[in-house]
Image (cartoon, rainbow, N blue to C red; front, top):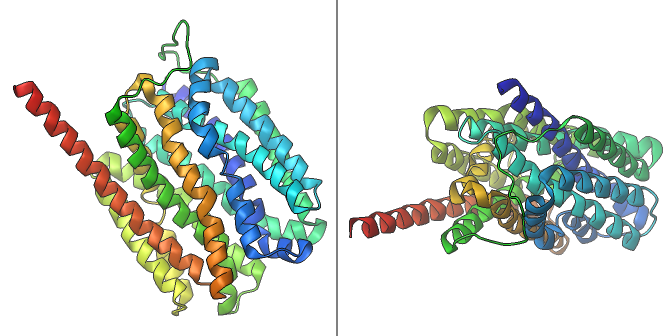
Length: 397
């Protein structure tokens, strides 16, 4: 059945790419929105975060909905909301209307994202899990990279609303693909009478929460780079379109490097080494970029070559923290932490940029987030070993 599971992964990859593409609609045309709507960068940061804010409230219920109604149905509902929210943004001319469309599309993206991860975990349970998760994770930066390259020229030619409408149409196309082609794995047991019930142990709750904080801080660092680095690079002599094109390589490089990180973690059996290396090197390079040091291109290349390595191994942490029967709920908790930080920290970084009038401030913040991810990984392993030692001691007694 290998061909089937890889083809299913390809479908899920496309759906998650649409999410990354739609997320980047605001980040790529941020300076254009500032001029067109007479807003500040804190407002742009708020719009960026609003896409992920629903995850604070929807991620855990989304996991429960997946257990009750089936993952595919919830993913389809999410894609419907993404298309509708994008259409609202494409026909809006004020911040409140943009915010409502952003919240609706973000709610759909949250529901979809939680269940896509669970679906891949089901198809690849016990076999090439880190590699499959790494490939799925790559879809997010792929969508962002397409947005970085294409959205500014589209907005320049047709206006920024065209960018929002395009993302909505891509979501609709993915909806049709999932409805027509996706199938659940045959060996997944479905409860006869599924109910809305959380059955995680206290150990599972705690470990999956720490894993979620690792994923959250890592992604905050990455998103701050792709959202604020183009504006920072203008100081180096780039125009906005050229800066966006350069930063898009943070996405293009991840197409290869995220799967490489997952493959190395599976092959070498050293996932912690892969994660820690990416956190440290990319974080330090971001700090150097924030300082305004030259040559900026060389430092940027270091970030691009290392920032994607931890992604796949990180995504194996929640599966290691929960049993198969609690996987959907565990993913909901995991993503709740992710969305909580992703919703608030971009706005905080935008506020810090406004206050300091320094385009490098959000980039420095990104480096700090990579350090926080490293600390979270260390905490996860220490807790895992501590609980394992307690279980061994109880069994000996």
